[in-house]
Length: 422
Image (cartoon, rainbow, N blue to C red):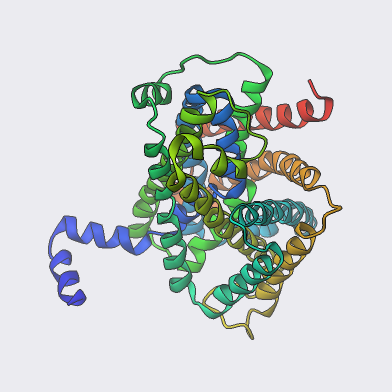
């Protein structure tokens, strides 16, 4: 039956275009959606609780930036057939590769710890024992990655992405001011010109556009084997679709906390608390869905960030690394994935460890790495020998450079203001 449907679609131009789009669909959307990991949910919840609908305007800018940066990554991967790690090693040498990989690995480990920490806190809120649950989710993640092939893993990632609908339901249950929410998304309303607002805006930017996201989208496109001129434009379209979907769900995360916690002046100390905090105003269903959404986001985040490090290791140092390769042929790839999750699990379960300091270190390191990764992206996308006719055009290049400087300034502001407490 499916073959007959496919034949009917392929006989007309629109149907053929749709099939080509579906053939490349996955990498950019999964990468963008995984930016809404547990740390991302926490950031959006805290921003919405403190500044209400006014912070929504930042999403418009962040969506454009995310689309541009991810599009560059997809274009590089499809055109060159190589991952970002491969290209950095070939163009800039082994020493630079070791430096970048070391920084990326530390930052990624901190992100995995943040996601597992959110899972731990959320399970406690649901009355579940943390230790067995953390061990179980690490084992399940390892089995999921090693036993499934690329297609299976992609389908699971896309299915887990659908669970973000839980945030739409939670937001609807809070009965927000939809008119104000939509206006605040398009036009700035009630913006607080304060350090805290700027810090929150930068946090929203930083949790959406990440160094690991740039590496993952390259590697995942390569693993999906998307190549050729006819696939490129559809992969680029998917990039914009993925960026929109990511911040579409972010919109509802912010709206849910803005309509409840901000309106009633209730402070929020952590993102995980949002699930319980909105319960008196939105009901038990909204609270449960918000909490389950954090569990889902934490799982998706820890797996994808863990895979990013494994992909990067394979590319930087020339090892086999693919979800379509069996364990015996990609031993280093899979063992590095398991090692990260195991270390993160041990740290999260240690009561004497300051998770706040780890998360702060991670954010600082991500902030320092992001401008460096942008430098490599721009160098490659302007390399005519590698990219041919697919180099950045003049205006696209200007815009990308301006955006890069904005992100650099944002990253520096975050680090400096946090260090000196101003």
